[in-house]
Image 1 (cartoon, rainbow, N blue to C red):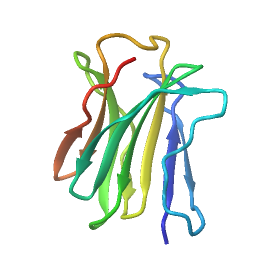
Image 2: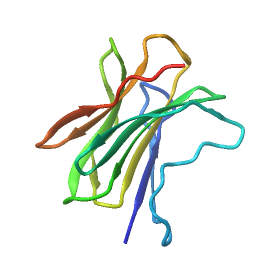
Image 3: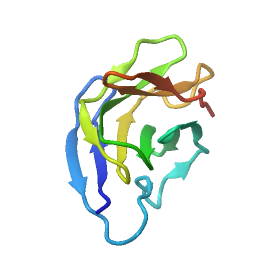
Length: 136
């Protein structure tokens, strides 16, 4: 059975509410932006057991970081967001199995700026991974 884990946060510094859902037979996909949003292309890093991406969403300004785990054993991981010069803002730890998508959306009043947003994945007992920076 494949599961999708989706999390939402109200602000960069505020914790969000968690929502766990189980899709039907369809392959897991990242949370889709609402129809009224403009989506800016994502930047991803392919990892041995999945893909880590950061995506800017506008109207309102939001930044999504997601990890799609496609293989391997269950891990404990958390997502983070930072700029190239800022400290990482972390989400909570979650158990992630093959077929899961771990996703976090942060709201930002800063919108697009030249510095670039970096998505971060920290896997307990393994290490930390980052996406290439993305900006408008």
